Length: 287
Length: 342
Image (cartoon, rainbow over all chains, first blue to last red; front, top):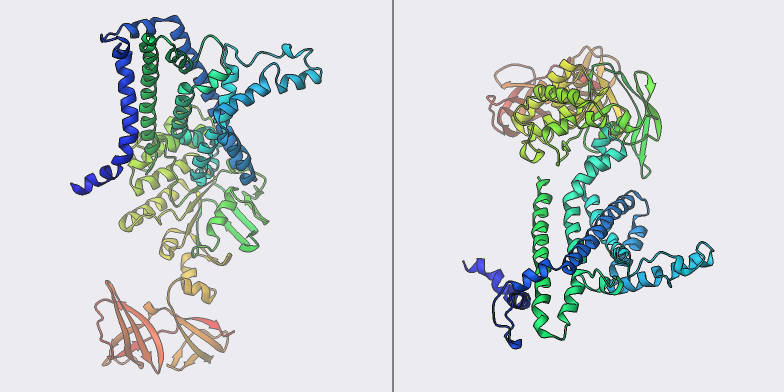
């Protein structure tokens, strides 16, 4: 019994801090989202704020905008990341490629990545200037608006730039751990290299790729700085909307912000559950 | 069915010679064993046959045509690997049908073939199972069925029974032999197990240090080893130095009649199991003293001193003598193999 409790007792100080902040924040947000905020005179528990927010058009468009950005950037990062990892694996210059590809974008903070995108892709940025000087476009304003646009291209590109190396790193590690002989067996049984990739390697890395997808999707769905710096005025990404609502000087507005936060939390919990499920898929092929 | 020929195959890795001028012919429907210790180049030979590795020199011929330029996926020489290497994300039937699926064989034809294979390797009821749900023997049969399903020109078995134990190993060995005879597939079996090679093959190629030292029928290889290395590979032997004159082998342990008369000075190789011992009352003309004794279940291992020459002898378990006992020894030098002294 004592032995069973020992790890928990040892972890208690850290867990108290982590869970204390996490759980108290979550409970506070839940209480406030239900309309209980006595400091400003809100004392009735109600679902009114949920009803209002969840039927509000701007909330729904923000939710779909956030889902669209996260999904698109994650899918692109997954596809390119897998192809990149596979090409690195087959390349003879593994060490050099790894160092260049992995380390640079991973260590760059998201806010810096957003500024890089702005400097390169905005109509006054480096790329339009180059194209203008090369005579490909007649004026810089001719360059398509990729930043602050309502298709979220700037945001997606920033996420893709940050996430591709992460995916490539995860996939490369898994690919290099898959028994090389399985590919040899497949080739030996008549499969060409393309078939080996699609029928052997891809299905074997898929559970881990799914986990990685959930991680980057959850991050880009809940992250604030990139859509805040590169996003359009409308629709706003959900975390940006939550931030703006939170900063509203009218404190009686706070429950609306908390409902948005609770929605983000709810979706995050689903993602955590899916992440947990994907681990079961990974262990499916063991043994 | 195909005839396979390896011509002067040479392969080096990091300047180390792995295969040194390998020549081998496997006739249609024949089962040949590549027998040798670990690291002697057996698996490399198989990989060269399949096209997974290219030789530095030499040629691989299938039905008298070079296949060196044929890529691995089109060579139709399939290996069954030692560790089965089933695809973990596929069921038994998906594993077996993999090669046919890659060849874009019609699904109905494929399903029929897979069913046939499952019947052949007696895996009915396991079709939907994943490799992790199978025993070692079952995995082995799936790997075998997967290889046979694509109807290879040559089937290559890389130590297929080494991961199985005891009874299962014997059963699988018998099963593979039956299957090979039934389907008449040209087969090469790679093994380090002498008994396995002798029992299963039409011919045996003994491979040592990247060279084929002897190629012949199992009996020939066992009874008439071409070199001392080949003889030693088949277990401990007695080497008795002596000279031959007028069909008499003269040595420190005595003079013996022999039919061999090709050279005058050399060593006579006698297998321990060919030496008989009796109680000293029996007159064999040769007396020895038991120096060491080891019990091995169905056999007894003895070391006997005859005129200060130590002779190894293997008898049935019921021939029980003690260390220090004097025994009569019978050696038939007509069964001996003579090696000329170098």
